[in-house]
Image 1 (tube, helix red, strand yellow):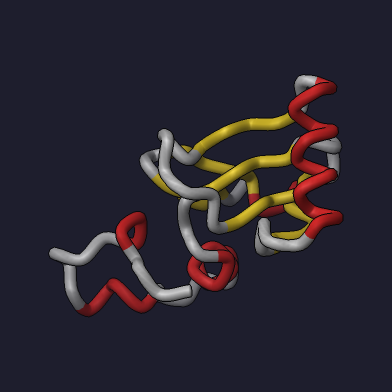
Image 2 (image 1 turned 45 degrees about the vertical axis):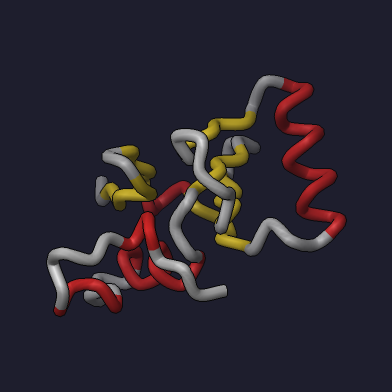
Length: 96
């Protein structure tokens, strides 16, 4: 089973990910709110701004403080943009 880091040491099984989406649209916001009410939301942001919403095949919704493109890159075994600069962390990525 391959696990990927979704921020701050939290890991998710790649084989269970259905989608990685931006949290900005109204339908995604409703999905997150419904998951919170059902108790299937997992907040892995450590109090930071939510930048990605990961939807799993079990119906869980995982909130991450990392950009969706970084998470997707990790799932595809690519190095993310911060790999060249170890002093810069993806949790503090300020673009978008």
